[in-house]
Amino acid sequence: MHRFLRIDCLLTFVVLCVVAATGQVRHVTTVNPLSRSQQGYVEVYEFDYVDVQPQFPGGEHGLINFINQTREYPYHAYKNKIQGRVVCSFIVGTDGKVSNVRVIRGAADESLNREAMRVISEMPRWTVGKVDGQAVPVRCVLPIAFRL
Image 1 (cartoon, rainbow, N blue to C red):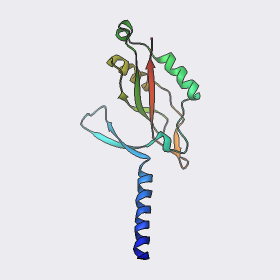
Image 2 (tube, helix red, strand yellow):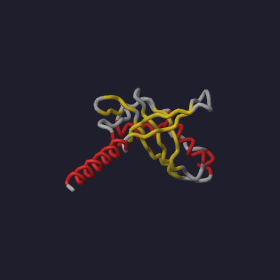
Image 3 (spheres, rainbow, N blue to C red):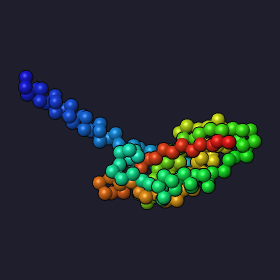
Image 4 (cartoon, rainbow, N blue to C red):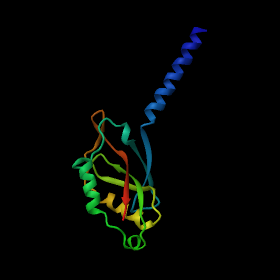
C-alpha cells in the first residue's frame, strides 16, 4: 500500500513539474515574408515567466513618450470621431528587435489596428529578456489607446 502511494505521489509531482515548466514557453507561428508557403515555429517565453523582463529604452516612461510621439490618428477615424483601444502582441527577440506584431483585440475601425501595428513595428531595440542569464525571445502584450 505504501509503495503504491509513493509511486502515485511521485507521478503527480512529475506531472506538475512538467506542466509548470512547459507553461512558460509558447510556440508562435512565423511566416517568411519572401515565401508565404513556408511557416515556422518559434519558441518564446511569456513576459511574466522570465528572470529578467525585456525593457524599452528609457523604461515605461520612454515607452509612453515613444507611443505618443509616433502615433498618428488615422484621418478617417478622426473625422468620424472613432475611438478605441488596440491590444497587440509582439516578440522581443534575442537581439532586442521587435517582430511578429499581431492584433489580439482590435478597435472598431481597422485603420486604428493598422496604426497600432505600425507604431509597435517602428520601436527601437529593447533590452532583451533573460532566463538563467541567457537571452531568450519574449512575447509581450501592449495596449495602445486612441482617444479624442
